[in-house]
Image (tube, rainbow, N blue to C red; front, side, top):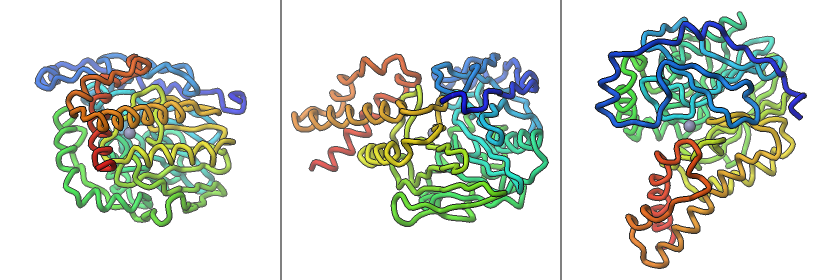
Length: 362
Ligand SMILES: [Zn+2]
């Protein structure tokens, strides 16, 4: 299977310019106890972005410029993948903590997700320009969490780019939540967040659940599926039809503990089953976090099993009149304890699912 995929990866040597010692941010790091990030002053990239547990550590310079390219893997003759840190935002990874990518066609470039700051959005654009002189025609934002969406303003400012997003984006923008998350990001990366604005998509995707909208550019076809709101105010996945790659966004996480805050765990479980059935013959799935994966897509079944386990335990807890705090304190998952971001996310997930099931059951 793997030999079908393009083996080469562009170890963009310009990376070196992204490495930097940081000093002045040390205070921020002390102020915010935040031990779940990327090691500072270190850049290491896995040999391959396929089927690996090896995690990138990409510390970015605090004084980087918009013109500085990002490390990117070439995964097929026309497809490029940013394999990001598996981390929370911090002053080392500077919001480079979700994957993204782009496809070069004869008529222009289609970008999938925009990374976590206006500066990173600009750096995606610079990376694309270093690879092709084709114009960027589309940006598809799979959902509106900061790590995927906060670079979108750079594409708006560039001009000529049609931005595609879920119709739930509008609800999210109007919910007032953005201000809080922008302020949180600024705690770590104020400079990179300069010029941030929430971006309303030019093309809104909605309609029936699992319905698809096709865009075609340079004879390449992209089917964008509305997968509802299992993880956010509105989630999309993208089927890159001609390569038969599926960009699954945060429907499953690879080698990273999931994070549930806006979505619906039962909807996620159903949509994961749909994904596995609908795309069982896909050549590759590309998640929002973690390495890409070939069939049988164990990241999807593993994320699903985690959510099912949580739902079962919380259902039992509620039926036995166990209080929320007690449920949070007594539900360690031994098989997940070594998975990245478990310590950060697991208790929050318990809290989320407990409250969710409380509403479902009573
Ligand atoms: Zn994400």
